[in-house]
Image 1 (cartoon, rainbow, N blue to C red):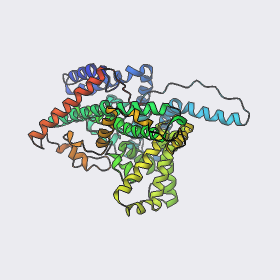
Image 2 (cartoon, one colour):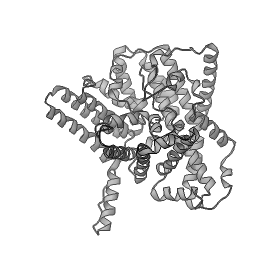
Image 3 (tube, rainbow, N blue to C red):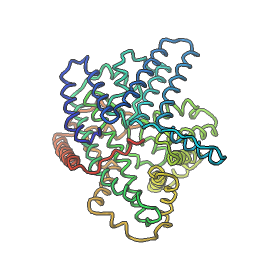
Length: 489
């Protein structure tokens, strides 16, 4: 059930809001939990039991951690949590990848291949597994108490806005909100604004650009002219940001309707002037998770330079694998890790002496070219696509112009402007997000005041957002191309 599907928009959400605000406050978490399980089971059915098994197991591990005082026993519990959660990912997400690579090795040495039926990949397993690990590690570190109420813990893992595509919510950031979360008019209104902004970004910009990207990447790379190949990459570069940030906007907005405040997940990453800055702006919840639960435990910046470089390479190799069980994702992660290492070796200092335009161009070039590996079906296609971009495909021509009809041209322009934050004043929290650092709102969502920019601005914003919402709803009703591309990761 997608946020942009008719069932969600016109049945699930209205019914849930009606029930949620009708029941006594002590029952509201139970209502949200039941709704979240229905939301997940709508598309996954049996595999909802896998998530429930993960919830129950991690809840017990958290209670065991708080009950134990002996350090060795606590470490064993944490180790058990890592084995449980990573093992779950290994079985459902990586078994086919591991077996196929193992069979390639067997074939090379003349051993018969292993035949294994690959399990279905449950939606959101990467996200709810990282949520579970965050909980257990936070309890182990003492930054949060174990959650004794099973309903509240299950809601943290299964809460439908962030369940299948993030953002990744660290337990210590939300533990207090599970019990106490006052809802103000300002918070609810800003939630509606963020949802409508994301809904429009998804339906009116990301989807049309995604159709062009899909058509071009589906063609044999040898048949692509450089112009067509570059157009496909530009459309995909805009699509993946607009699509994923739209989902985050919608998730953040929906959560606010129930009193939850999620940290931001994007801070206009294509405005970055280095790869270090890009990862402070892109998928911030994942960056923070990898920093807190992987990079720092490996030693972070407190070790020798060579160990720092090893840590960065390890983190981004695993970051790539987290996105998908394919060598293309591994290469994508290693490209990002390599340039982060190069910037530490002196490239960042060199870039700092160049004009801002050069810094932006460098970052966009690295990010965009790496997206080829992220989008390609395999390494062979990725390399062939890069060759086509360099002119080693079908030769130079203007055939790409046939892909740019008026709608695509408008989406390219508006998508670029949206990526550059020029539409950020459409929501009332834009000033709070403008100075965002490290995934935190500055000065904080509590300072949000409805209409503080004036009645005229408030009215204009309302008209524009309602218009966007109606146009986007029209696209939903028309049954147009409507994927959420981050679901497959």
